[in-house]
Image (cartoon, rainbow, N blue to C red; front, side, top):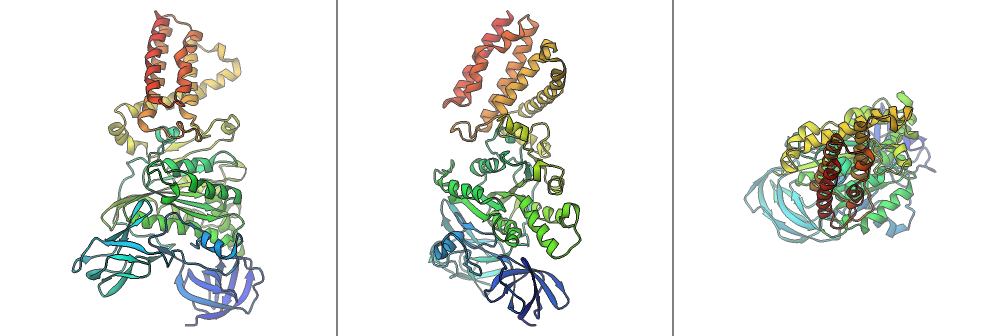
Length: 575
């Protein structure tokens, strides 16, 4: 089997080579500069390669070398707080070598080979271990990194060491094989999990519209489609910052350079509310901006997912943000057209839906081979051209994911943030998580949530009448419904991501706010029955105080005070 051939044809990032006999998805080194690429099609003696770098200047006749290995991720201590490109080259290391612009053909290992890590064994000589089992721990930032037996190795521990080692040094000998702290994994192959669980525990994010109205389960999948400027990135940053996942993997897939710069400069400065240390200590960033080679963009989501699965296997809850899957699909479309494949809808490849579902189906919560429970929750941003949610990427994503947070341009224009439309969004996890909310928040929380949704739905129906004949034509009862819906929208659903108090709202406070709105609704209807006038019911002072209570330092005490005042003011009206 020949390992070196030559270039036959070049079409942008797609190169045809002859004289090598690779397997599908083998990594090859193309041209004199040894540009990294991946075999994506084999036609007789010809191998079609997608190159992860710019191919300008590459010409037929140059050598092509087959490495015989698929694209693999390096997994081990040192991943957290790293910034990689789509094929796991550490960008800060490359920057030190060559400044702000990366030259072609350069490479650097994903994990630092010089750093020594403090390894403490958790098994002893003579113990029997199997693939995926934990054999030792390493402190990594604020987290505990569990060193696991690589898949394919099992048997008796013949030797195990303690002390400081680099990721390449042998720390144990198992079943006659040397084991180091680093392992390799092909990015396109899902890492195995022993047992998958039902998605019945919510991922708490501290964002009221997400937690109370449209919650996502741990190990679940969610999509945030929306047009330009509707707040996809801010919403994902809020999820990264506040969700109760221990580790965040953020994939900036084909985003504009300035947006990615914002993420890269903001994350190191953000303090982690859980530990007080920088949030970056438990984050892995994969940056593949829109001006980077298109083929590496296609690989970036798999690289990010493999890193997430590695930490899930240790028993951690991972929050994976893919921003945005539309750019990933565009990369597939570009490569597909260069391969002269039959185009599907809007020029996307026919296998678009299959690739999207392969990616999202790697999410999940379950028991890992290390006897720990871990989860990966995937939140994919979709950037449909012109905000058109009927285009193929959005539609195929909606068939796969079970939570849909629909960002709305009209809400953005009204300065309502997060601009998530409460009428078109949905969650399919609500029934499975009902029991969790009843036992962990409050017995009456699920019915309270349903009541809120009904009020907002009713308001939408009444809005049509209001637009035709004006709000004065409505009966008094319906005027109260409109007022209650306005409170739900302005006090509860609106949330300021940049306000120190309002940026995060714990579940007990969300419940207290909803309960207070329900209390106002009940007392207002009672006051109306007792002869009070609608303008007086709407103008009570405690209602105005409620508007500002969520921004106060002592917000919980303030809500209690508002509740007491509201009761006395509305009772006095009806007397």
